[in-house]
Image 1 (cartoon, rainbow, N blue to C red):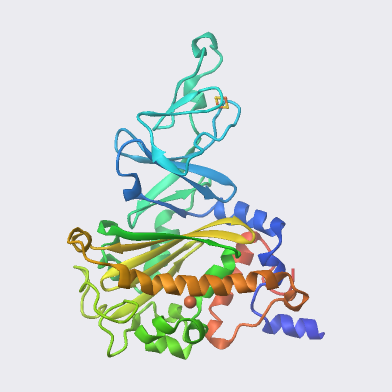
Image 2 (cartoon, rainbow, N blue to C red; image 1 turned 30 degrees about the vertical axis):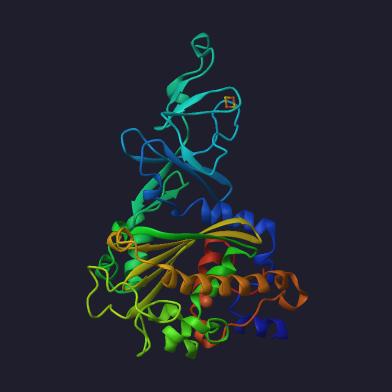
Length: 379
Ligand code: FES
Ligand code: FE
């Protein structure tokens, strides 16, 4: 066995080029982001008919819109005439239809082609045939999840089942009533790092003692470097002097209605592959959605969700938001520190996973399998 082979059996990380190679990123777009369920839009952002949002899913721009009938639908954001991008705005509201800015073909919010200049003189153009291309959509936890696959995998299995299995049962997440919560704050982060660095960072807490002083004050067991993911079954416990999940440990907003004693004063962290992090604490829920834009760039949209009564009463959520906002900034800075080094000769063969990070190897195995790459060794 050569030294490289020995390292290969020890090294559990992916080699550096997985974070820098645009071709591999293209393969990920095709085999991960175009095939799995992707958490796209918060449904309440599109409350009224005509509201829409466009999001990048893999290589595709996806248009999610609330129809006149109240239903949410998703389409490829491409005009069927000559392929112009239909909606260039990131979000907005239309009265009844979307009109292509190129030759003015017009589509209903249900995706049907409803008008085109001179269409009556073009008998060959069948309106029913030239509607927007639909994308599968499911609503769960108050979000619209989309899947670009022609035959999407079962949502219950791939998303709901994966989350509840990690929590040890559906009832754990049910207690938070996530789909009934209201948006207290949203912060977007433009992270100059590969999406997998962000996932790997979220999956381990070996770094917590070094870069998360505020978080380890609230969750002292994180200072020992245990992975947040190990705690999903029972949650990481708040420190004895901590009153709430806030930047200074002062009190939050009590408990959400469905939270019992066993879930009180605990933090649960769950990764929903490929691009969602769910953070559950007694009085709020934090949802991260990642939008990988390039091999070295990922947008992260983070929502802080509270009981509607808390927001209606005008409570100040800033101390509550500030804790995870700082965690986000600390984490993303760490990811951005790693990104330029991924192309170094020193990382060509990858790095090492210490014991408390070993579960990250499962994520790497999942990525390799999805890409159809061999499970071991270097690529
Ligand atoms: Fe849209 Fe021609 S490309 S109307
Ligand atoms: Fe972190």
